[in-house]
Length: 412
Image 1 (cartoon, rainbow, N blue to C red):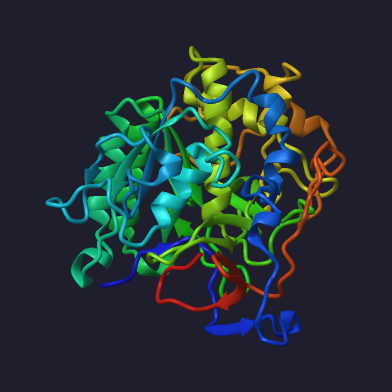
Image 2 (spheres, rainbow, N blue to C red):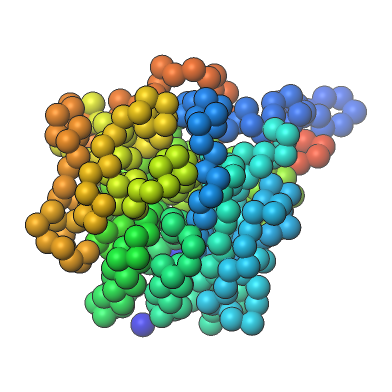
């Protein structure tokens, strides 16, 4: 049974729209991209009070494994941050190359240096990235290869990486039951080695809402996306697999497929990267904690839904807020060897997930299906990029134009 690996980013439609209202006599003119820095466009960093958080933790000492199509080590924002890694899709190729750009974009959201506010600033800028390529460039290597994917998880489990960022997944219907079991066994092994796994829940909420793996694998924290109002994004796949949510809409990234400039983007891929960075910040502050303890504190300190059941099927236990631990000192790590997403009375990581609500989630008001009591009143202004629908804005020398497109199996 052949299927295409789906990178968890929003689908685009092919439309190019020039901003006709900016045309003037003598030629086409557009507002300068320099009027607003890239750092200012990263609205979620201000909402998360990143500048204050960085005085306490920048993620130094933490390595995040990025399972994707590779990570471009020569990208300016990632200079000196990308380890050798390994290419499981095309073993003869270097994992520090990234023909598509998706893995590089995710790595920047985690560890980017910001390039003096002109490039992407990662939420955990002093983390290191271990690139593990699991999606190749050929028809054979780009299609489903569950064995390679599982091998990459095991490799990460045996590495110095503490966090696995998986901004991709297989939709349920594309996998045989034995393949889901194969992924689960690899996940179980990684958890047994003390790793923390975050995986994108998917972007098909309005198109079948199929669960993806490994986000739906037991012990993995499936990540949903919220917008700049901290309301669940319309595309964000929902269900019991969603453990946490993070900013995943109107997110600037380096454009894909070798296109110049930066693009507005959205997807649970981006939300997963923000979550992985959040975990890195906490873990760097508390290096003796286990992955289970970091995850438990993230669950306890998340911005809970304002009403309804916790965990919510849309945002899980809430929207990640590392500052609550780092700045306010809140969150109890609890037992080191118990995964908070696994049944408390079952030591096997393969037990049912989502059954151990944190103490705070039991006592706080639960959330509506589609929103959270997030940091809407926190310091930091937000300058939205005006555009309708599922889109990306490419900022290039000489003008601003809107590009909406659809690609087979992957998009940002």
